[in-house]
Image 1: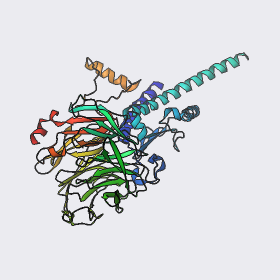
Image 2 (image 1 turned 180 degrees about the vertical axis):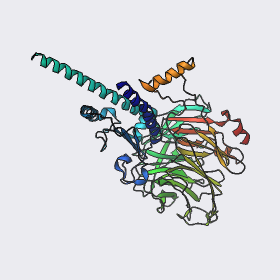
Image 3 (image 1 turned 135 degrees about the horizontal axis):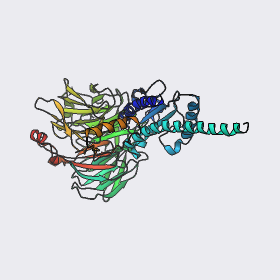
Image 4 (image 1 turned 60 degrees about the vertical axis):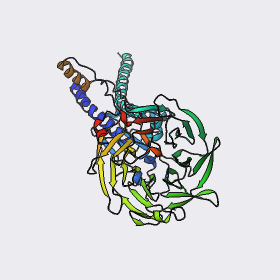
Length: 177
Length: 381
């Protein structure tokens, strides 16, 4: 039973990630753009949303009801928000703690956003300056690999929590036998 | 490989411009300076930096080098523009009174080099001319009509018409006739007598931001690109123009250059210049990419069974890490294309075969169309 479930999940993972990769290739066509509203400023337009003509249509890619990815793009910046699969309470807590750990260290990731967008678990903000310093195809590889690894990490964490819980419970109850 | 010399000059190049005899090139290495290199078009030459122009405070967004008067005009995100002239061994800057309150995004000398136009984020275009009495450059502003930042400006060969593209997705043609600077006879264009700042045509062909307007050598055609991966060709620009739009399956383009009346090269986020041509009926089509791209190495499987097994393996479990690789000469977006044929050698019948592209990967690449294995294009050239 479990094996079949995993196969089904994996069946939709590849198309989901390919779709995200293709969308990112198109959406990550960013360029330097000086702010129209304030002189001498240069801001990521997707965050401020002051000029409607500089924003592109946001795209929502859903793998199923629980997992989705929102890609919002503009002339000089791109925001990717991901909602990670959370099947039960334990995964919920683990995902929240793990992603909060990563977001707090957003400085070292450079493209990560400190707070996820409302309704999502984690967000990336990629600006034209990132594209100038780093290769665009490598940035996309990073985001897609990140999404794959998140799922693996959370499954591993869940497994280790359950194992540890079982061990602790066994040891504790031994004193009563 | 159609590419001639490849010169990696900085981490990122915003814009570049060549001088009259193609012996020097001015680039902006994505900061507030302009670097001038002693260059040559031969593939194995090493370019040597000779001057650094250091007056601007923010990113220099546009450079243009006037071939006859040897003056360089630069514009920057700090709302200023300077005209530089070579005196002895130093470049002296003259401030231009632009009267802008937002960043300047692009600049181009007029064909007669007595005027130049600056596009800005203030939704205005400044047309500047030299005032002898006060010894500075003064501007006249075209304030109306633009709804958003102007991305590029292009002068018609008659020194009066000016095309602009903007992030409101439109391309507009204005009259930039200035009394006292332009002769009275120049005011009569295909549109009749026109006053300064009058909008003559508004082209609404793209659905997304438009970039890279460029006129053909005779001024009969105009081309510009849209961020929705389209390229638009307008011929017989006048009261009744004809337009042809091509929707491409590739990533958006950023800049275009007319090589002749029937050939155009465009570059953009694909990092590969594209050649377009028009046939004898005036219909523009895509011809080919100019860079020979090597396809990624395919992993070989010996038998059909092994290939099928490999497919299932890939579908289910740990997928092989997908390594994307680049195989074009430019590793990042091409932002500017410039002709490499001196003005004196340009003839209407002789299409240009040498041009240079600069991009966000910091490379200036020289392309020689004579090396392109495109016999068909050469036949019709």
